Length: 444
Ligand code: HGY
Ligand code: MN
Ligand code: MN
Image (tube, rainbow, N blue to C red; front, top):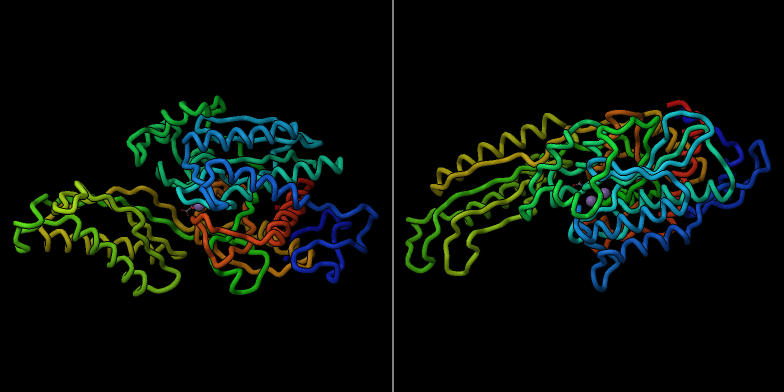
């Protein structure tokens, strides 16, 4: 493991650390007190943000991209950014980047994530990475510590892609992977365009896209799966992201009377939607781990008790860490769709909503994360990400890696999403130290 130590004063004795709590420090070259985030301030902000678009009776939120709830969440975080004296800019896809100056005119070291959520979002997905970034800035400012590189904290638009596909839209546009006009013209699940909604909520910014490449990017995020918790490990050192394939499938059958139409005469779009749903589960089981497959959305028309469905529109989400296997899964789906169409006498058309190959992060940045967490006495494990993240887009333009904290019962995209405060604190402290080291010249 490389990861050059820039701030020896923050290397504690192993014995000082327990359960992710950073204890007092001995050793190191200076008597400078250890720098750690303010745990309660971070927890309070996470609670306050999750109340925006809050889901009654839970700690979760519903803030689909570019909705009024998203606007309200953006307003709260931008206020916090401005209260910290950061220079806030908004670009043409609504990405918000807040910069703390460095002592030298260098590209910023960036951290951040997203604050849009799925409809059944949790308190931490995305929010943790943005608010821990602000916590890092506030902790440095309170200690009157500057860094050579500027520090930037960003939230990227529409990371979830649940309303406007693809996911990671904002960061994809930021790195030049999608044209801003194409993004604006994207029609959402509710029939409106992303650009019109972005303008309506007042976040159609003036900063051009693509944005400037950071010196490095580090994203703190909850794992959203069961791996860390099952292994009893506190910090995930994320080395990459698996490939993602989203397809919208439209099935055109024939609406007919549920009572009078003999089964042999039916062209039932609803039946084919159900066949596809069960087939993708079998596909994933036959390919085996880490292949996953999900039919998350199904719309039937006219969706009535006594009408054989005329049309069905559904989505298939396929993912795998291996690109060749993911392509085989996509090919198998195409073949099966033809078979289903012929058997039921329906017409099937498909549209790709998102397609990202697996991404490898910077081994150097990953090593620095691993070394930092280990120095803090935290347990670590190397792993890929099952979920998509903005970091996978920033990895196209700068050295990038991620820090994971455990998810209770592996639950996410669910208001019951939870991560233990000790783990939130540990992750934010690792982020603080890694950003300091990178911003003061650690090799990338
Ligand atoms: O779909 C994903 O993996 C992420 O939550 N956008
Ligand atoms: Mn996320
Ligand atoms: Mn998510």
